[in-house]
Length: 530
Image (cartoon, rainbow, N blue to C red; front, side):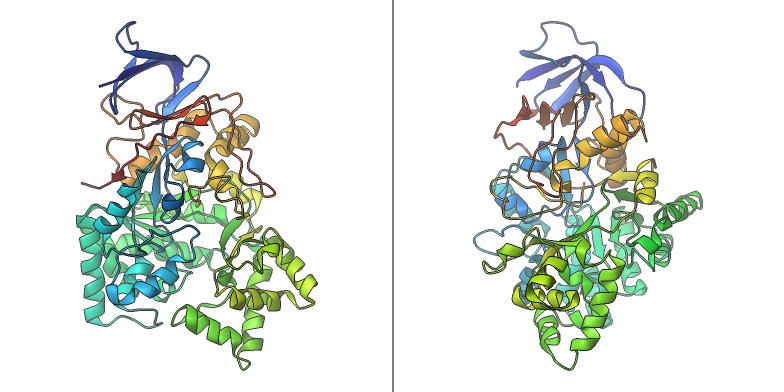
């Protein structure tokens, strides 16, 4: 069993405590000692003087489910110091699955970029999907959530209606089975059909299953602009009624008329915590969001799935109603010049990748909302976009909170394999951006608080017992960075750029990044909640 001493670094242990100079002894996949380690005790020493030794970062909100098959090393994540991705967020995930509805689930997963295994969906549960992931020898750890949208597809289909009692019981049983197999909780995406068709009583019934297993309910809440406060309240009340822990995903306020409401929502979360509700949040450090272009289309038009949506978009009788609704939502999100196309499927439309909806509309000589309608039809609704719609007041204020973890909302990507996708830079830059821009440059929070928000806090929210701290007996997941130079390089014009200032990353005791280069070692695990 190999041993390594990291000698003379500043240890910021992930607890929020002040950093201190010391050594770290790694033996196999564990941290064996922290503090002063005698000379000659290990087979190898690495001088980390001038560098920070921190726990490997835990990305609490990701969509790496499909990308892990394209980029099994977790390239863009591990280069940031991320050693664990929490996947299947926003109610979009590969399990549970019903064999009779594999096609519907595969269509649903099409909102994420990346590949499925060559055999397609060949599993029905957490264990089956985890087995497929383990075959590719992942380079990062994955902690998986059951996806509420996928639960609904499995038991109800894509219909906008309440479940029957039998269907609700089936969803509860499927969720229970996922949790028994080691899933860390359930995510919901209450703006994305079919998950958005669920009402509060249905969600509460599922959350009671989570409470029995002492697991997490992570929610992309029902609204993040005009209905932000009532949507936050819905999530809090679900926690109060069910007893489940609640994680509000990517806390923000979308649209200039609502800037400042993100801070109000944070205040409401703090008040709920003071009253005894176990509720938290996560955030990414950018003033732009990214999601499907279909997010501009009202939920009623998506009742029945992708085929039904496409039929309605093509229906002349519904055209003006839909165009009006699309234009209204696009205005809230900043207007057509602030919606940039990031991912398209067809070869014919690749010229629009990196262009705005305004660019498409001008070239086609149509209104912006009509350009949206056309692209959705031409791409079978599989279009992703970046929306420049967030305000600095919320971003900065939420960033300083000790109850808000850092989560990228991104995926594990590779600059060469994924260069055709003009994605949000958060998949490459979230964690170094916090350390460089918000800690060192803007001085909005201390280095210790930032590391805590990236490691100890997400581990505590998830109840991940042996990661998230630099502590003897914990797993040897470590991020080692230069506090004077760590920074993100990825931007919206050129998002496929690795960061600077992170020379070493260990995943389960193995060097995944050495001298700021990927080593090609894949020593990640699919983590299971005990």
